[in-house]
Length: 94
Image (cartoon, rainbow, N blue to C red; front, side):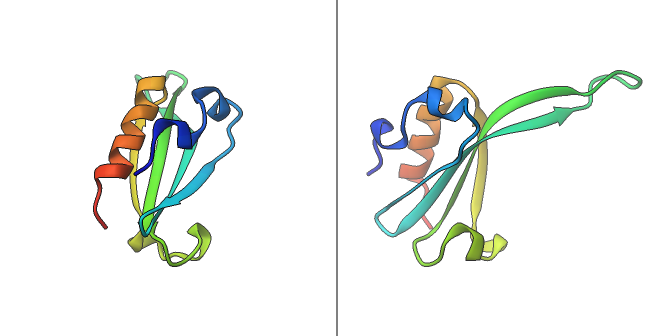
């Protein structure tokens, strides 16, 4: 079972570095992602920052695993969003 302490502190992710780990036959990757959101027509797109978490079977590295075998989900880029990432990793079955 992954604990919140296992995925480093929230501040780590402000440096835009991914974090990877494994637990009980599954691997995970957590990244900070900046997404552009189109507001109203004729206005500049806004940026939203989220956590994006990936989960796959512990067989291959992320880069070598076929995309269709990787689950992905986005979460709010907040400390509670990071807790939700950990809960998702722990409760999602592959």
